[in-house]
Length: 172
Length: 464
Image 1 (cartoon, each protein chain N blue to C red):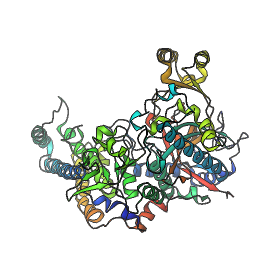
Image 2 (cartoon, rainbow over the protein chains, first blue to last red; image 1 turned 90 degrees about the vertical axis):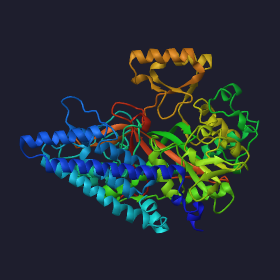
Image 3 (spheres, rainbow over the protein chains, first blue to last red; image 1 turned 135 degrees about the horizontal axis):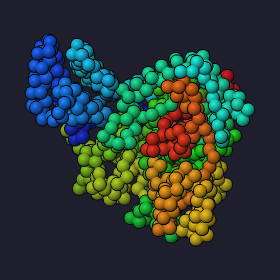
Image 4 (cartoon, helix red, strand yellow; image 1 turned 45 degrees about the horizontal axis):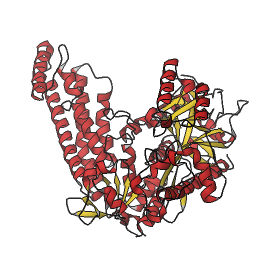
C-alpha cells in the first residue's frame, strides 16, 4: 500500500493559511531585496570622503523616513536600515519571511533565509566597504533563493518513499 | 579550553560513570570517541550542529517574538536494551489501562478514582459522557515522563495524554548527532524505529479505510512547538492546517478549504486544546462520529496530576496486573491528613498544580527561597484541591559538553517516552524517547522551562 494515498497529495493543498503565508513570504523577500538595494546604492555611490559619508547618511535618512522608521538621536540610519526591530529593516523583513517560510516552504528555503540572516545577527561591520560586502553577500543569498525555490519546490514532486526513508527513517 | 575531557563525579546516580569514577560499559564507546576527537574538535562540531539547528528552524519558542533554536546537547544518552524492555512493557501497560479507564469514565461505570477527584478535574468533559471513540481508544498518542533512579529503576513522574509534544525533537536530535558527530554511534547497535509507518497504520485503523484524509491542526507558526507541527506534517505527508482552514459543513462533516475545492476530512491530528476556539462546531462533528480526533476529546481527564495517583489501581482493575513501572509517591492535598503531612515536610517535596504542564506550576521546594516557599504555602492553604505533592526524587545526572570550557558538566535529566495505541488496541512504544536536560543547578527539565534536548538511543548488547 502506498502511504502517500493517506493524504491525497498533502502539501499541495492550497488552504487559506498556506496562501496567506505564501503571499507574505514573497512580499517580505521582495521588501528585503529593496532595502538591500537602497543600502548598496547608498554605500557605493555616496560614501567617498567625509562629505560623502554625510551625503550617505542623508540618503539613508530619506530611506528610513520613507519606510516610516523612527531613528533616535545619535543613532545611525545605516544601522537602523540593517537591523532595527521593525518590519522595515533588512533584518526585520528576513525574520518575518522566515516565519512565513516555516509554515509553507521546504526546509531548503528556510535554510537559505536563515543563511541570509546570519551576518545580521552577529556584530555589524563598521566600515562602508565591509557593509557593502555584507549586504552584497545577503543579496547573493536572496538571489539564490529563486533557484532554491525552483529546485526544492516547483521541480519536486511529493516526497518519494526513498526520499522519506533517507530523510526520516534511515538516520534514526 | 581544556586539552582533555573528563567526567566529574556527581551526587546521585550518574548515567556516565559508576561510583568508582569508571565510565560505564555502555558509555565507553562514546567516551573513547570524545577523547579521540578532543575538546577543540568537539567544540567545532557543536558549533556546526548548533548553526544547523538555527538554519533548519529546529526551534522551541519560549517567547513567540523571539526566534529560538532548540537548545540541544549532542552527547547521546544510551539506554541498554534490557532497561528498555522494562520501560517499554511498563509504558504499554500504562497506556492500555488509561484508555480502559477513560472509556469507563465516559460511559458511566468507573469506580477507581473517587468522584470528588474526577469531577473537579479541569479536563473532565461532561459532554463526552456516553461517547465511544473509534476502537474505544481516547488516547492514541501518549507521552510519559520518567526519571531514572539507577540500575534500571525508572519511575513515572507524570502522564501526558492531551497533546504530548517532543517526538520530532527526539527524531531530529538523533538525526543531527548522526550527521555531525557520527563517531559517537559508530560502535553501537542502535534499535531503529519507523514513526511514519506506525502513525499511518494507526490513522487507517481509526478511520477504517486505507486512504483516510488526515490533517494536522496547528495553532500557528508562533506556537512554542511549531517546529514539531511542521516536521510531523512533512514526515507524515499530511497537510498542516490552521483553524480557519477547516469548517463544519451542513452535513456535519469537517471540510478543509482549498483553492481548488473543499475537501472532506476524516481525521484531525490536533495540536491544540481548545477546539471550539479554532473550529466552531468541531466538538459536535466529533461526537457525531463525523471526524476522528487524535487525541480524543476528554482524554485530559486522566492527565490530571491528582488522578495520576490512581493509575496503579487502574492497571490492577482493568488489566489484572501489577504496575511494571513505579511512580513517584504523591499526596492528595484535599485529604486533611495528607495535607498536614505535606505542610510539615514541605522542604522535601515537589508541589504541582493539577492542570499544569510544561513545568508551569511545578515548585521544587528544596530549590526555592523562603519567599517563594511562603507563597506556595499560601496557595496550598487557599486552594488545596488545585495541587498535589510528590516526593523529591534524587534522579540521574548525565554529562553535557560545555563548548566554552571544553569540559563535561553534570545535569539532571528525565526521559519522555512516546507510544501510540491504534484502533485495534495495539500499542507501539518508540525506542528511546526525548531526554530533557535541566539547566545548571535546577531539576526542572521541561523545554518550556528552558531545558535542553539530548539525543537518546536504545542499544543492543554487547557494547563494543
